[in-house]
Structure formats: C-alpha cells, structure tokens
Image (cartoon, rainbow, N blue to C red; front, side, top):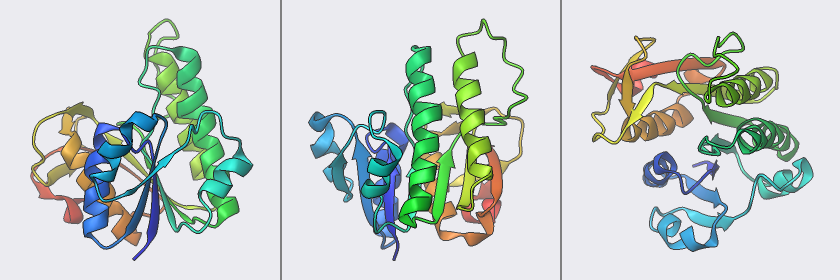
Length: 212
C-alpha cells in the first residue's frame, strides 16, 4: 500500500483514477480548490483535501505532501486564461515537484499531453501556445529532479467508455479519459515506467502490458 496524493482531485480523470487506486489498496488523498466539490471527491473513496495549489508556496505544498509516498499531478487551469495557465500548469506544478522532493514523496506521475516538448512548434499567437509552453517547461523540470517520475502523454481526450486497451507512441489521435485514469493507476504500480515519457492513444494492447 502506498499513500498517494492526487493534485487536481475534482477533474474528470482524477475522479475516475481515485477509486481505481483505492481499490488497489492505496490510501488516497485528493486535493482540490472548491469546497463545494468535497462530496463528489469523497464518493471516490479518497480523503478530500481542500487547498488552492495556485496560492500555496513550496513549503506549504511540502507540508501538504508530508508522509506521502507518491504524487499524481492531474490539475490544470483548463485553458482560456494564459496567466492562470502559466500559474497552475507551469509554476504550481514545478512547486509541487520541489515540494515532493522536500517531503520525501519520491514517486511522481505527471499527466501531460501527447508529444509535449520544448520544441512544440505552436505559434505564439495560437491560444494553445501558453498551455504547450507551460506543460513542456513543467515536464522538463520534472525530468531534472531526482524523483521517480513518469510523464503520461494522452492524446485528444474523449468521454467514451474506457476499453482498458491503448497504443503507446501511436499517431496522437484520441483516448478516453477513463483509459487515462486506468493508465495512471497502472503506472503507479509499475516501477518499469519510472524515468519514462509514455505517449498513448486508445488502442488494442491491455494497459498494463502496453506501458510495461
């Protein structure tokens, strides 16, 4: 059993990942900003924790992660506001990595996006630019830490039912959020995913096999 904190606990993917992790025997804490979402999070079996990670500094985040074994970053500003995208997807994410190191939460699973990289090639005038920039900077920071990190790169997210099967390093078409949740749960269990960036679509290979 591991003690796992999910940051961004009220997101669609996190709400599906938490019960999978709980079912696997982990002690899960889900962090989210809006107190109105507490009941939704509690239904997953995770312990709800209200905290605004955008406002917490590294020391406060380290306190939040004290005693945890693993962190799953599934938070995001949701696009639309470039300043907030940078504040959450880049700056808060980086603080959480530094905090995880301080707190001794060695395992860190980042939910990024398909083929995120510093060489993303998105036009600065494109509304997607700030997100691409923020995520790639955060991912790069994570790779430079001494955490046991895994970066997950799902392609275009859908609300289709999860098939439990994916393709790794495919074309970057689409993947169901339910499958992403299953990939998170499988990656946490599989130390072979440490130090790897795994880009994936919906596909035909059972998840545990595909990411191993």
